Length: 183
Image (cartoon, rainbow, N blue to C red):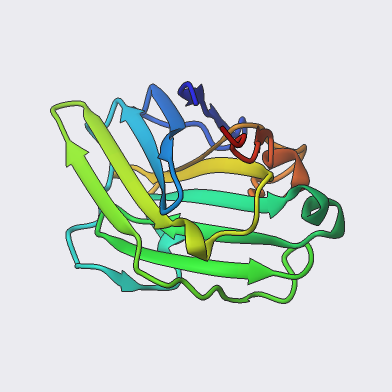
């Protein structure tokens, strides 16, 4: 998948962040590997390393998010949410309706989160075990919550619904990922 530019929610513009992109780096029988790239990070709050552990509330600071719904599931409102923080903390949830029925999603192995920070750049890679994901094909949402030094937060997604930022809204599931074709 080519990098997709994420769009900042118009009611919550970034202060210094100039651009955010996200993409699937690779997908095989065992792993889904994703990358988020943030440019303009001089004022970005990056949670310090805390080690791998499932943790709630990651969206309250800089965090990257993946939403997946089986193609038929999006119409029914069933989907999975995955959160990845540069601290290496992560979360995974299942929903049985729009923001309803939230439960921890079982994951057979912890995701591997690899943040890298340059002078004005943050790259965050996340590798998830395929066995912990919904069956393909997917409707997918890629998003980011970015906190800057003064506490301001910007909300980035492939697309936004009208109104307040809401990554759970079906409009944010703007990408489609097909099942691999048999050789």
